[in-house]
Image (cartoon, rainbow, N blue to C red):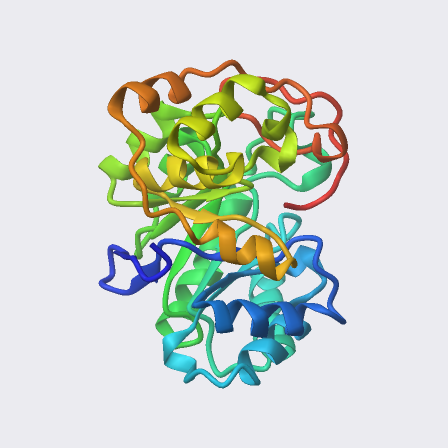
Length: 295
């Protein structure tokens, strides 16, 4: 499964399983990247907001694998809602990460983090300006692909109305107990690949006994079931961990969830509170307490 790829709408291949690096410190993330590469990972996801782009770049440069065999994504800060802010951020990321180009860069959120779940303002013009900066960077060869994150259907349509280059992905909170099927199907219908961040529900799914029973049925762990679930939805899956053993087991997902179990998992009850991670948009539900952080 670790070597499976999907094809973006511009023909670029993206590994379907990647490593999320949120909460892995800049001073240690290079070692995590090298461990992951040794296990077989070739897809790494970071962001301006994570504060670890420098370390991610160090790990990629020193991992011993040719650059063209690695796929690395970063994200335009959610607060960058003018062309100049977004363009400056893109250039800063490329400089900080120390690579000649990025495989993909995406807008981290349609709203600044402090406004998520707090405002009806969808930053229509700001997102169009940030998208224009991504398009120009793509045309200049700085980026091989461009996309979105945390965008609802209306937010995506706002971009599609004016874009010269169509978004290639929408990275969203997608996991058992939070499966926005309307959004997933909309994206897939527009040839926009869905990426699932936090596929293990920030760890909260581990407390759900019903999910543990299903995992036991397949002889796998709950995290493995969760990752496999997102892959079977046709999404790219981005579990985050700095633990090499977890990296290894997260990649051991070569089993098949039955159609009956997939249906049940799609409709599993919503997790209403993610504890310390209760700051992300939940599609179809409501998260309690935005904590201006950045997935």
